[in-house]
Every structure is written in C-alpha cells, then in structure tokens.
Image (cartoon, rainbow, N blue to C red):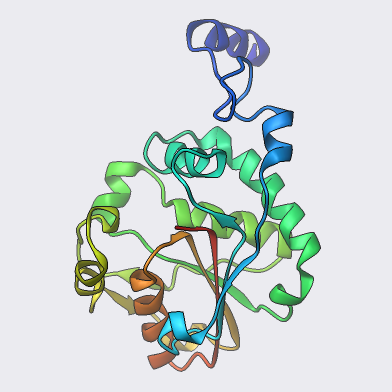
Length: 216
C-alpha cells in the first residue's frame, strides 16, 4: 500500500532535483557529490566571547544547492530533505571527530511556541536530533524562547541583535552542565547564536560549542 501511495504521489506531485531540476528525487547523486563542505570555522572575534568555537560546514548561498535545501526545509516544510541532511552530517562528523569530542548534550536554538505552531517543526531541533543520533548524545529543549520575535532574515545586523536581546531563558539550569553543543541552521551575523550562548553561560555552562549547517 505504501508503495502504491508513493507512486501516486510522485505522479501527481513530481519531485525535481534542487540542484539540476532532474525529475525523480530532491537531490540527485550527481548534485549531492558536488556539495562541498568548506569547514568554515569562526573564532572568538566573531562570537563575542560567549562561544568557545563555531563550525559551519557549508557556505550558504540561496542560488546554490545547500541554500535551496535549507530554504525548502525551513520555509516549504519538505521534511524529506532530512535524509539528505543526515547523509551530509554523517560524512562531516566522520571527517571531524575532534570537534565533537566529549560533547555531553546537544541544545537546539528554540522557536517561539507561536512560530512552532505556524511551521509545525523547529529546523534547528531537527538538525540537532540528527546530530544526536549520529553522536549518540541526548538532545535537550531546556533552552526556550520567551517572546515572539521578527524573522531575523528580514533584519539588518543591528536590528537582529536588538531583536533577540532577552528572548531566551533556561528552564532548569542544573540540567545543562559540561560541554554543550548549541545547534542552529544558519549563522549569519551571529546575533541569535550569541544570545543563546550568553544565556547558557549565565546558567553556568563552562564549555559551549556551536554548530550550524551553513554560514551566510
């Protein structure tokens, strides 16, 4: 029955590769192999000393494949792309063991409850869960967003910083100890990731690493 439903769905709503528009799958094998992990590392001068280090494997450009993957996951709710992201992250983790060494808990950047209801899922949490499965580490939603904020993508750098000030809090500080991996989808100005890291630091977390799928 599942195969029949899938065939009917593919006939009515055909899928085209986000890279080359070839019909059949969201990312064809040829386009997948062209996605290049640049391992873009950002250090303290970009992170306001709240984070120890940030890694973003891919460069975010809207017109390129990785940008389209994130856009379609985030704004068009194409959850089928999680399989592609999982494959990318498995490859990256396998080649960068040291970055993830001794991680004790993974914390996604949270969505406000209203935006979660609008979207139906938190893309940062989905990425965090994938990493949690690969690393065999727990994912904690102990970090929460207290107020509804404007979408960061529509704001300039200063507006982004102002937009997220005081927007986050820790539910139970005692549950976040040791080495924390903070996860989001895209790092642009660093306003959101830095604000989250500041709250974690104030809660007593000593070692905070951050991972974003891409850097804009």
